Image (tube, rainbow, N blue to C red; front, top):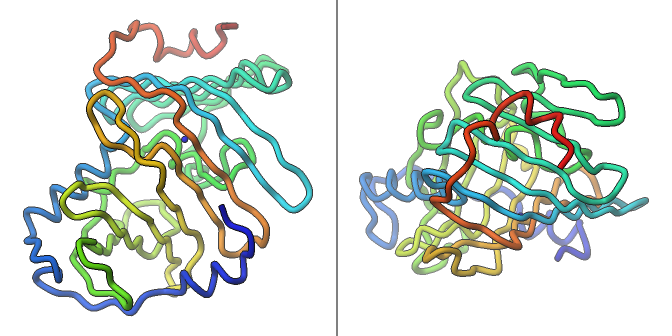
Length: 257
């Protein structure tokens, strides 16, 4: 599933000047924008998937790295289990449609996560619960439009995504830059309701996983916490794999594997 000077990044990633338009400088139409958003939404998913992921969490005072396995079925089911470090081994997360649970082996308790906590930090990282398990869909739960931005690059499409009003999401909007002909994201910028840039997710190290070109690295940089970042690296990623139906069960949360 690197930044060195956070103040410089904040300046470079200042909020773009946005204006709606019927088509982008590269000539994309509405149908293509919808296809791009769907491709990005399902970037790391398929009918089923299995992944080995490394998550590096960096703060000014401490740093740690998690290694975990992940399984998905479409957009509706997600299961994640931490393997390392030893103190976090066995911690697991399960989502089935709109319901989510965490299992903490130290207390041997399964905790159901309410919708109000979907935007809370996952395991102390800069990614939220929703980032990891994808309860909300860009394609289904957001409206989107092509936009122009300052310093636009040729061959890059820029899309502004606005969440439905009834969603418990803290973002006022999300701006995406993606390679137009490959549907590969370059970055996503998340703004609050006042238009303040809150975090930036950079995508890099594009690799071929099962015949699909996918960024192997996602770097989430909060703009309000100096010196913080979380990097996800996909070490393995397989699509359309056979997955035991019991994987996505509360019983499997407690399994010591």
